[in-house]
Length: 86
Image (cartoon, rainbow, N blue to C red):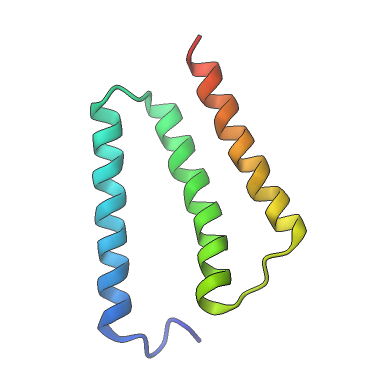
C-alpha cells in the first residue's frame, strides 16, 4: 500500500502541497475571486489532480471515462466562472 512505508519524504511533500494550496487560495480570495468560484476551482482541481497524480505516481488506471469526467469538471468550473461574471 502506498501510504505505508512512505517515510518523511511523502509527509513533507504532502505538507508542502497543502501549504501551497492554502496560500494560493488565500491569495485568490484576497485578489477578489468570489468564494463560490474559488471553492469550485479548489474542489475540481483536487479531484482532477488526484486522479492524474495517482496514475503517474502509483500506476492506477486512468480510463477514457475518467478523462471525460475530468474534462466535464473543467467545463463545469468554466461555466461557474462565466456565470459569476454576470
